[in-house]
Image 1: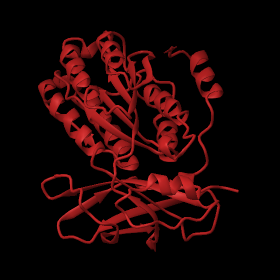
Image 2: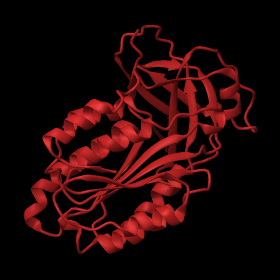
Image 3: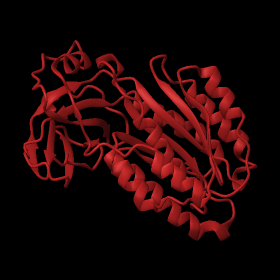
Image 4: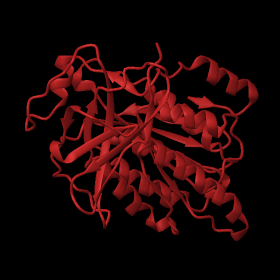
Length: 323
């Protein structure tokens, strides 16, 4: 499936893809929520028909090592400064729906083979219950492989990418967020965390979708964005890369992901490995907001852990439902 960066094509993409659901909450029915919680956790109490704010939380120590033994009672979740009561808590890593985005603009030509091998190594670490799609982008955005759990298909799609053209990062993120939103859970067993892992080596030069539009969509989604910004080889590109670095950091921080900026292409393998480790070390939890208003407003979220030198990271907030 190819998306061409012309005014006509952008209008078609924006008009035909479904609008994001209001807010950042999900509706959890009792049977679904119980099935989603770990058998090792204490029994949970759920309220049918209540909007549950869903969080994927990463916990690290001072050396950025992932901490996976935190109990429910050690977490505190605050919404706009008001402490919330957790409705469900799960230490078992849920399946993932992942979009793997690869910058194939002309500036990547000499580094693409190493980038491909690093991405393939990442795809090989996906579990059988995970699904992923491959998206490559330059002047246009192409879904090289739709969602699958077949490692062979993912590897073939990654190897098929070629470099050329300019960079349409915003278009690629926008389309990937829309594609991930189509992944609907039909049962508790189908509930998946959503993530985007995007590799780029420069600023956006050809997107027709603005940064603000993509950020708004990202903040309304249930998707963590992990960004990898490759340092430019040419010193003349430094200013443009600084702008790209800011944007990549913002996407990661707002959605609960993480931004990486390796200086050498050879470091990519380790970066992808760190992302894979994080995705397999997260906690899933949720709460019914104590704020009864359904005004569509932005609500800030903070998660704390009652241990010294421990930091919890999740998305910065969500938009409440509007009725």
